[in-house]
Length: 121
Image 1: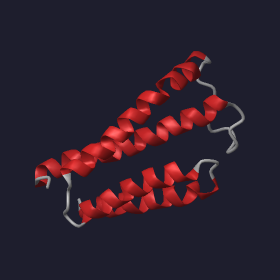
Image 2 (image 1 turned 45 degrees about the vertical axis):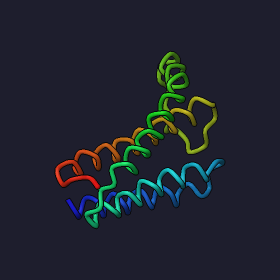
Image 3 (image 1 turned 120 degrees about the horizontal axis):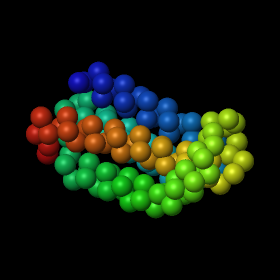
């Protein structure tokens, strides 16, 4: 479990670093950095219930705000969002953002359930 948490922390730090050249880097660096920080704390055996709940709530609200854009992308037949690194259309960027937040939410949910076995603080 400890190794998985350290790997997650490294992956999310790298995700945050890659966002430095993004048009809106601050929110992504905060999100990915926050998940990296939670992963580091988990690797050290510190599971904070309220911090996890707050972070999962942010992800859930963010996902809900992106749902209309995902619905638009699906209605368009789910065109490729990985064809080029530059987002030529708005739905490409919004679909990528949606999946980025889903990945963060998934990691946080994993921390929540693995922390439940240990006892959340």
